[in-house]
Length: 606
Ligand code: AGP
Image (cartoon, rainbow, N blue to C red; front, side):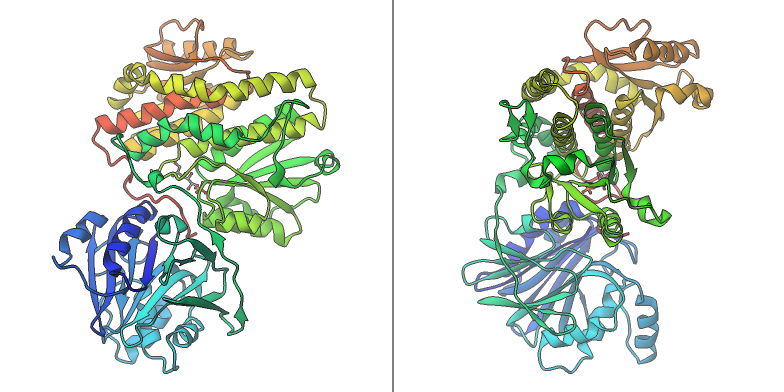
């Protein structure tokens, strides 16, 4: 949430900052701004709206200078406006601050500063910091920022520049991700290493409670208490191509199409045909430890929670370990019981979701062990967990998750297979699953290639104001994810319900105007699903179905059949048409597909 980028070196800062902002825009996109030190003074440009709006107000010659910071915002304190856009400055315009997070005692600090004669020009909590830093008298910027942060409560990732001390950017972290990027005679700061791909060679991740002084020739890190710390750097890996739409109209469309490759990478090196099992080295669990697991609890938010719901189903079905998923955002507020023999699994594509991080910290504080299922390598949650499974799905730029949902589901299938094979799953069952997993990429490709066949379903949904998505058992996880996808990108109201629960209330809302999309695999619950469809049809509700070939769907308005897999893996394929459906409906309605209103890719605030 909110993207930060900073540059100090001998190249012109502005083009690099703007490139970084374009890459980080998915973190927040209600306003954007940049500050560059030009001839000993701060030159600031900021604008409500997207990065392209900022581009339109930049002076034609640019902002000539080699030190600068920039920000793309997802508003918390103060509505999106030019004035509330970052960077914020002090009264003299010397100090520039960009911030991701929330300063909890901002109101109190604001009152004190106002009583001291400070005039505020924005409604943000961040502006407080600029004034606090400017009033410090320490000799160096890093000491001034450190002292100012001593007065602040809350969560932040910040970058600060001082026109009077142009040799460094100061960055600090307490709850908001900050990385330092190391280039050749130049250095970077960012909220997300992806902003630095193609420029920085190595990155160092700041930990909470650390502050860095970043100069063109290197960087040093202190704790907020002032103790020196050493930071290891890691090579920055990844492809710049992930941030380019290529021939696609939207990143969402591109990322749906990339799923065969993403799944191949998730599977790569993890299928053990010798023992008919999977091998996930990163989980660091010996067979004996796997045998000792009595329960699995999966924690994640939004799509990650829904993928975790399917994951719990896979683990319980294949490994016969009781497994349950819970929204990470709720978990820590109910004083959860943490058990030694429970395996906790945190799911997050970004690895930066605050609620998920806080849930992990609650588990660890009470002595529980946590594995991560994460896409972003080196992210905060990955480092907090210390062990787990990387998805290797590649960067996901569209705000809505598509390929990472699928790769997460595949990673859970691998984990369930590995856990199952140290328990009671037969080698023959393991071999069937390995074959089915290997077939997934081509099966997904065949669904994506039939995108046009989803159009009859999307045409019906696009005319509705409300829709139900129903499924049974693992199909309910698919229904939840499908409904969320439709809500996020099309802004239509879609509600997921367990098919079995429809008759316990929501049936009252079924009418010819309210379509129901049913997940109808050809499995042992088929007869039950067909009965539910009949109940909806009897109330004149239009029914759409995502199903398998050969399923008798009388009276259904439109349907799409996916290729058959092993029953446990069917939900992964049944979800793909729902992604296409959401995309088509949103496109038909002219929505901002990659950056839906009010959302951001990673939610790093509570
Ligand atoms: C997915 O389409 C959503 N944008 C959202 O629900 C997301 O899955 C959730 O915020 C969790 O994000 P994470 O995977 O980065 O932790």
